[in-house]
Image 1: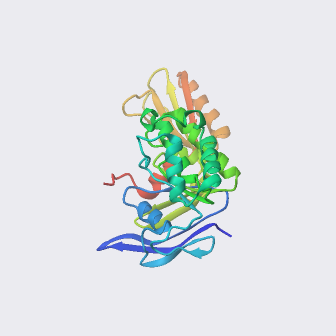
Image 2: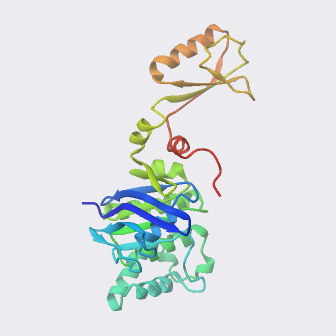
Image 3: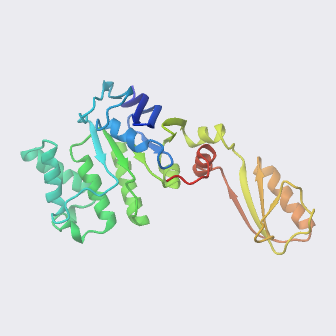
Amino acid sequence: MPVLTISSARKAFGKVLALDGASFELHQGELLALLGPNGAGKTTLIRAITGRVRLDGGEVRVFDRVVHGGQTPRELGIVPQEVAIYPLMTARENLRAFGSLHGLTGQQLTDQVEWALRRTGLTDRSAEPIKQFSGGMRRRLNIACGILHRPRIVLLDEPTVGVDPQSRDHIYDVLGELRADGISLLLTTHHLEEAEARCSRTVIIDHGKVIASGTLAELVDRTVGRHRLVTLRTDAPLAQGALPATIEIDQVDPRVLRARLSDVALELPELLSRLHGAGRAVEDVDVRGPSLQAVFIHLTGRELRE
């Protein structure tokens, strides 16, 4: 049974249709990426899951119980994009404050605060005021506040925005430990390379509808195909007509060639042989498989969204 089910979710704000029948599921222990351009409906959908937006149609179910507007299920943990902590308090004081808001008291509150500090690697800095924390440490404390009550589902809105690579890796280590505990994670992000590398499945939403969902391999098969993009740099430009028309020559640097190959093992040696026969040495070769970014652009287009 899915831990979270969104079925035909619809929501309009005046004449603006924010959600237009969006549907998908989140499974136990899964890290699911929710992607979409600006204005696609992601924020409205997250607010509907938390009970902060009442849907006009469809429903949200958490562990097969319908979520009603104004009521946030206790099984949910929320990590907002904006760092929502008290800057003049210490990490431990912040956690105790948020724990009290979740209804934790006494020894249970103390135990959960220590657990959250350990889980996010902040125990050694727990007595310091937040104003002395780096951006990455504040992000980790933001996560600690969201998981303090040990939710079974955690919604994370851009949890790594504005942090350095080391902090980003640490945050994903924390998320990996949560998954190992059976916690399900729904992640929104504009870092497509992170979603590709870290998430087990991806849901892409646009104009209020889910337009694609699945693993990277499934999305690639349904959209751009599994060809490989090969980029080569030669020691000098080639004469016009020396290669087939399917080989693209870079307009800025004519020594750079690009080709889409279906079978790299078969087609690349032939291409290299032709370059050698044309009297050109190959200085560099780069082979890239289809990416989540290619899928995303294919589905949502290249135009800017405001």
